[in-house]
Amino acid sequence: MTEHLRDSTDHLKNILSNNQQRGQYGEEVAEQLIQAVGFVRGENYLIHPKTKSGTQPDLALLMPDKTQVNVDVKFPIKALIRYQESQGEPEKTAALKQFSADVKQKVKEVTSRSYINPEEGTADFVILFVPNEMVFSFIYDKLRDVWMDALKQRVILAGPFNFVAILRTIYWSHQNFKYQENLRDIIGLIKSFEEEYQRFNQAVDKLGGDIDRVADQYRQVVQTRRQKLVHLIDQIKGEAKNSSGAEKQN
Figure 1 (tube, rainbow, N blue to C red):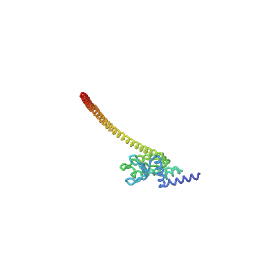
Figure 2: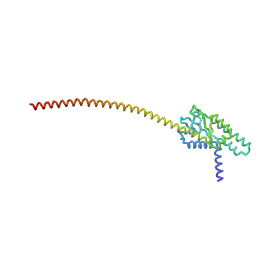
Figure 3: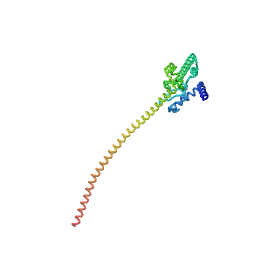
Figure 4: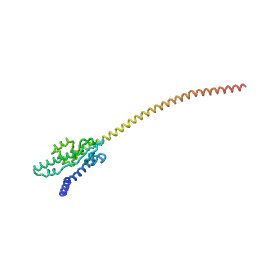
C-alpha cells in the first residue's frame, strides 16, 4: 500500500510538473466545480471562448446580462516543489523568490491578454484560478504582496473554495434574475387582467342598460297595447250584446 501511495504521488507530481497536463488538470477541476454549483455549459459558462481581440481564456462565466467573467487557469509549481524539498534555508529562500516571480509572471500574462475589456462585454476583473487549495493557501500566506498587487491589477486569485463562493454568487444572481423576469411577467399579466376586467365591467354595464331599456319597452307594450286591446274587446262585447238585444225585441 505504501508503494502504491508513493507511485500515485509521483504520478501526480509528474502531471503537475508538465505545463500542458497541468493546464488540462486545472480546467477539469474548474469545470467540475462549475457544474457542481449548477451551471450548464453553453448557457452559464463557455470553454475557450474567443474574444474580439483574438485571445482565448480557459473559461468564461456568463452573468445574467451575458457579461463574461473570464477565468484563466494557471499555477506554477516547480519552484514550489523545490521550496518544499529544500533542506537549507538559502535554498528555500531562493526557491520562494523564484516562485514569487513565477506567480507575478502568470498575473502579468493574464493582464496582457485583453481578458479585461468591458467594451467587449467582459467584467472589469479576471479570475486567476489555482486549482490546488494547498498551492493557493501558500500564495495567500507567503506571498501577500503578490496577492495585493494582483488585486490592484483587477486580477482575483482564487483557490477551489474561493472559486466556489464566486460561482455561487453568480449562480444566485442568475436565479434572482429569473425571479425578477417571472415577477415582471406576473405584473404584466395582472395589468392585462385589470384592463380586461375594466372592459368586462363596461360591457356588463352596457348590457344592463340595454336590458333596462328593453324592460321599459316591454312594460310600455304590455300596459299601453294591452289596455287598448282590452278596450277594443270590451267594445266588441258591448256591440255583441246590443245586437243580441235588438234581435230579441224584433
